[in-house]
Structure formats: structure tokens, C-alpha cells
Length: 269
Length: 301
Image (cartoon, rainbow over all chains, first blue to last red):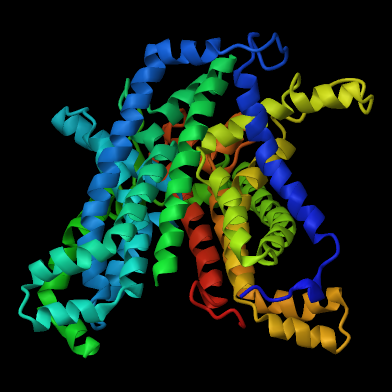
């Protein structure tokens, strides 16, 4: 229940908080507004226009990069969630066992190692494999993204498993359900919010990545973030603002859905 | 009974179930990292890459410069400056996010319960927005002809545009902006657990709000403050995108230095050694974090 907190109102804190929120959103808002600028640069406002959105959608590089980003994010999120489910089940639904710490450390490794270090490490390996096999397809990006998505898919699934009612599974197994049947009919439906949350986190993380992609990609494999990074080193037109605005909208939708999933999960407990 | 259920399953099954995830991470994260360690002890190849000959040179180069003529070793000030700059900028970023983030988290924690989720969502949205986009938003505002300078000139506060972009200040602004949510979320989590009766008790005993803050609130949200600081410090020290976009690629930080060594520098062993230095700093920060309570440390640490 909401307790009375007013006894410890800290002077100035509300102001700082509101200024912080303002500073968080003002740049994004300006970014979006400037996407509707008819002029050539953000410096001179030439009136309202949606032309940059159309020009972004007709720019083949932007379209290709967007498709690649979404493909990559979807594939890596799917694979990382698929491997995170059994891993999370093995590591929660069990008595402590030897090697647990090792497995846990390995799964959370991508969270701890700086991205740039993973990126150059992958650069070394990918360069070697490329020169041995000649393969320059999307495989490298998919496996690299999947690896750093695994902990993000794993954590919400594990959190869900830890708060789930274990007695239902025990009951199913007392009633002679085979482990796989119990998993399919009892565990999985309950686990679903966690799985969805994990998938979406992984999806967003993959979509967000720029450093590792930049080092692993072969020529012509630009994702939207690496394309933007490349463009930003030159002079920019509001087209970049337009792309950002669309991307921003996508993030807001994904985060809001994720948030609703999480809080409905919490309420059910 | 639940305990019985937990005990089921052959021990090998745990490894089979975790194998796919572990294999991918071994192949695309842990394995390559080991190779970086190995590479740091090799000799650079002529056009990037390495030749397989053992050498300590890269590690010597981390700290010392060899004089071209006399072969004497002197402290490698240019490297050490980059390391020091990175640590310094990351620390300042952490402190600023702490100063802005704590009151913000406190503000959220003191809202009515039903509205807290909404405020949290507002913190979370920028966090999940693409890093390049957020940095671009900052770049757009602070550039010479950007909104900030236009406004300052119109208001008559400055006569000519301020050069903010491509300075350390720009990098700092960018990092604070980008990493602030990482401070607010864990601090909020620990403030939320705070027992409000403690605060009432302190207040009933005539403690002033500020003294409640120093003696009750701050100590009991210590674990959140440490978690937030670690979460901000680590990506800040290893940042790569922000210095490129806001520092103009001239004000190097460790992440960019590593890229430079692997790219134009064509000295992979040395780049590997610097990568390991960076990783060591990050691990040290994590260790401090784990010592000071870690993720599961109680709110009353």
C-alpha cells in the first residue's frame, strides 16, 4: 500500500527529477520534430514536410539495412531464446550441482566483457575463418548476435521459473506425466510471459548493437545502426532524423509491450 | 516434496540442456577472448594479423616506449594519457549520473504505487532506444549551428556559437545522457525496498529531512548506489560510439584506441594487450561491486 512518504520530502529532489526527465526527452523530441523539416539541415527550419520520410523509404541502402537489421534481430532472438529455455530450466529446476557456477559465469560472460573487446576478439576469429573457408555470409553476424543475446533471453526466463509454482509440475509428474509432457502442458504455458520477455529483450539488444556488428560484418552487410554511424561521419540531412524517428517509434512500442507483459506477470503472482 | 522434484534427473541432463547455449557462447564469446589473450603474446604481422612467434613486446608497450635510437625504455605517456582520460571521463560520468539519478530514483519511489510504473517506463524508453540515435540527438543539439547555440545567441548569452561538439564536454554530455537510466533503475530498486517506517521513526525523533537522507536513506540504499555506479562505469569506460560521434574521433578513449590498433595501426598483438587491460579494469570494477553486496545484497547493507 502507498505509505505516507511526505515525512521525508527532500527539498530540491523533485526539481532535479523533473529536469532529468526533461533532459531525457527534449533531445529525442527535437530529433523527431526536425525530421519534419522541409529544409536541408537541422539549422534552418523551412516549414513542415514529410518528404524525408518518403526519401528514407525510397533509399535502397536504408531499406536493405532495415531488412537486414530486422532479419538479424529476429533470427538471433529466436535462437537465443530457444537455447536459453532449456538452459534456464536445467539451472533452476534442480538441486545445486557441480559446475553450476561455471555454467552461470559462461552464460553471463557477454554481459561482463566490454563490447569492443568482444568485437575485436570476433574480428580475429572471423578474419581467420573467412580466409580459410571463403564464406562471407550472414552466419558470422547471426552467431555473434545470438551469443550476446543469450544472457538477455535467459534472465527473464529464469526469473519467471523462480517465481512459478513448482507444485503443479510435481503434481503432473506424480500423475505419471512424462517429463516432456509435463514440460509441454504445465511448464511452458506458465513460462510463456518470461519467454516472450526474453525474446523481446534479445530482439531489442540485437537491433541496438553497433560495435560488434561493425567489426564482424562483411562489406555490404550494413545494419541500420552501422549504416547510420557511417552516415553520421558525413554531413547529415533530416533523412537521418526521419529514420531515427521511425526507429524510436518501434522502440517505444516494443518497450511498452514488454513492460505490460512484465507487470501483468508480476500481478499474477 | 518440491525438494524431491528438484532433485530429479540424471546429472548429465543438466549439461545436455545447457549445451546449446554454452556452445554458442564458447564459440562466439569465450573462445575468441582466449585467442585475444594468446595474440597479445605474439609478434605483429606486416599487414595486420600476427606471426606465430612469442614476444613480450606488446605488454612492454602498454607501459613503456622504446626509444628508436638508444633502445631505452621510457614511460609510454601517450598510452597512459588515453587510459587515464578514459578512467577519468568514466568516473565523472558516474558521479554526474549519481547526482542526477539518485533524486530521480527517489522521486519515482515516492510516487503513489500505481503511478510508479509509468515513471519507470519513461526512464526505460530512452534506455531501449538505439544508442546511435540517442547520441545523434545530442549531436544535433550541441553542434555549432544547433539548437543550443541558436538559443544562446538569440538570448544574447553568447555572441558567437560555442564549440561544444568534438570536446571532452561533448563526450561527457553524451555519456551521461546515454547511461543515466542504468543509474536510476537499480537505485530505484533499492529505494523501493526501503522501509518507510524507518523514515517515519527518524522524522518522529526530529531528524531533519537532510539528516534522514544522510543517515538513513543513503546508507540503506547503498547496494543500489553501488550497482548503479558499476553499471554506468563499465559501459562508460569501454565506450566506443560516443567518442566517435561527439569527440570527433580525435579525443580517443580506450575503445577507440583498440579499434585504431586493429585498424590503421595494424598491430593486433598490441591491440589485444590493450583489450586485456580494458577487460581487467572492468573486472576490477565488477569485483568491487561483488564485494560491496552484489546483486542480491540486502537493501540494509
